[in-house]
Image (cartoon, rainbow, N blue to C red; front, side, top):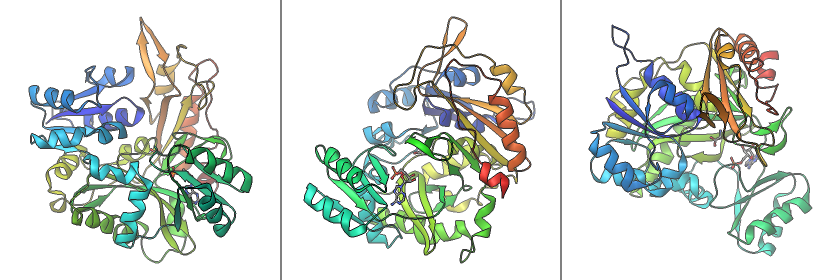
Length: 427
Ligand code: AMP
Ligand code: GLY
């Protein structure tokens, strides 16, 4: 297949790496892969093309001219811009929802409405358009308070706080721009589960956990994600009624997909379920309409089933005919290396050293995020620079390898969390 991958992060590097694992008998890649725009790491592995991945007409023209068999959309921005709609309109298979279905991520109010209609378990929420309504809801739910701006990318505009004053200030600030949602606080471990969907049927990948705060011990501001691991050995020990993945399919993913189809907005692509395992069951805190970053970097290395056929089947409507994807029993851990100042004001332009030494650690691969080549230097161009990914027989081995490798990388001022998967390692 000729595959075009849109995006430029470590998630897209992980997707490209997974697609490249499929080889012919003579060892050459089965698929012809191009990434747009990609980054310095992706460009080492496959062809890259500089085009605006969020411009629907440009992507459509490129895909048509180069007779692309499948377009895989990594980030949210092209979905919201309607890239998938444009490709589907000319019959090009695309893994990624239309703009209307992508609202499941972009509009928290839309997601809540779909969940209500489909009877999907989630926290109670009140949508407030005035500060009086917001304060009433804040006091009705009580501490800890959860206040979210509607219509924003994940992580931004979310306050989870024990401080009533802070909750009210947060609501006041965001109400200048849009309504806010005041939510019931859900207590329990967080799990990310990705499911492929062809609009009708869902197929699960393997559960992962993301570490969203910048600092060790879940301190400091929210980020795009500082690390992740998969699978989650403790899931089976929670004493859930039935298998975790089956529960999510039956009570959350399949009803959501069915509801979207019934409303004429079928969801074709990746349904990312952000979940909390509460004492009263598994509940949704958010949906995303794309692969998560950094969870993708730990889920895809464990995937044994060829990825391209799965994504193509989702894009063309044949997912129900395929067996469920298989995963190795290995554990994968990723630790994100971030620039000085991330997430507030990341330093850019600094040179990265030691990547070859890091990649030489057994079981380690390095997914690039914000990197570029300048002359013969590799430089950091943004906040999350690299995802160091390690697989091992268990959490302990994967962690040791990931930290051994990241310790060999040198980038002035860079920081990373030292406790990714640490609790799972101890238990
Ligand atoms: P979101 O942008 O909705 O994913 O929220 C960012 C983070 O805030 C989530 O990953 C959770 O850690 C936390 N969070 C969001 N909503 C809730 C909730 N209702 N209860 C507890 N924690 C939440
Ligand atoms: N890992 C969080 C996200 O991709 O939104």
